Image 1 (tube, rainbow over the protein chains, first blue to last red):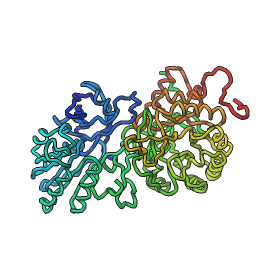
Image 2 (image 1 turned 180 degrees about the horizontal axis):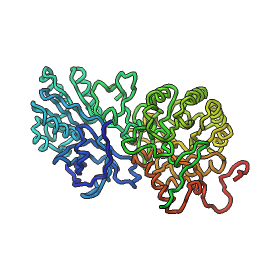
Image 3 (image 1 turned 90 degrees about the vertical axis):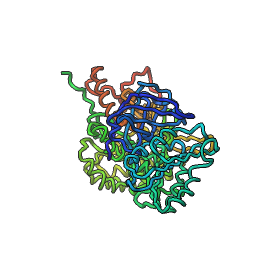
Image 4 (image 1 turned 90 degrees about the horizontal axis):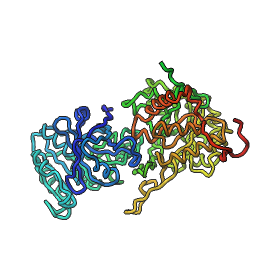
Length: 269
Length: 320
């Protein structure tokens, strides 16, 4: 098992950057030095809080200035709403880094990142790391429902990424969804055997995974799961394994959150 | 130097160094929380519920949070007793505290078989019988809601082991004291009160249950007052030690159960939130005893101050 820490950290900033979307930063030398792209943290608002009760999992969105970690989150319920109310110098309890993280592609391999909505969170950290090793320009498809939700465009361009943006309502970028772009991309790039990394809504991941499997491409998806402990104890975050007699279910917290696409039984998703 | 208070308690013949136990299903197979503290400091660890054959568990979603509570329908996912004994148990050699296995059977025969298997394993100090899991189709709960069936399961386990037998009761009955008395008569040396309360949650947008299993078991602070009441009811009606379980988050919660009459307590859901909860409770109970000049924790067990007759007593008068 990787090293896991519990730390109380002091928030450096917590600001809204898009519709219901917030970016939070805090410093931790230990967590920053251990964290790998694709790993996540379990955040608790404070020891005495009983509602919300459980910690909430957040992927590590970004690390900068060596020890500043960032979380990108959308307000979807009480936990994230309360998180958004925290101010500079407030503290949160964090457990991490958790999970396996992404397998980094080799320097000569072509890399495609596909993010749906908040799925951009872990892929940003991945893009930061890939940029250091990749000799080829990274391609990214980034999709949102509408232009109000669009975030991080300039930051991603700063990473020298070949970025294609979609919105479902066509209010910005290409009208449609990210998987629409994948067909055309595969027609063009299949021979170069790109490695695909995807994070986003489950139906998007299903489509991406099935297309990657059909094209015999390496594809890593980062999944979400309802989890209580994040340490492999509660066995809450089960996801059906594809054809694994020894293990009918994987646990997102320990076996994931990143899975090679053929590991998952997409039929039940 | 002030002498340290004696926190040791006796659970049906098993003497333990402090009354803090980890609840089954919330401490994995014993070594998952080692990155956070040394489990040797706990009174006992109870490992994940085991069955004869491995069980895959229920389809997800298996857990949903509700206000101050956790609704789960894990479905007793476990590796099976043989794999636990062969592969997991040897890795727990460094943990210097008793290990209790929680067992679940599809039939009385399976409970008996598991008791027999565990009897030959020295490292396992006692058996906790799960007759209270709400989340499996032929639920153990079927045994836990019928006093005769509960007694028969207990009897068969007791007959096949020399180790202390603890029976974990379900709260999902009309009168828990009837089941408690039945398992006491059948030879149980201790009783754990309580397992999760049956519950549901519905997604109003889709009108679907939030758990694929439709129903689940509720744990966490939401159930503490109800669990405390059930412990009160059981200790008033049986003579064997009772282990209090249900929503314990800190030492004050633990003390409530102990004052009501629990000889020990189990920490469950709290392990998921603060992995160090159990060990923090051991430390804080020690500090409490020092501050309150309690030299032995047994002095507080059942020290609830009430005025007049205890209305929860049922049947024959209990000899105190």
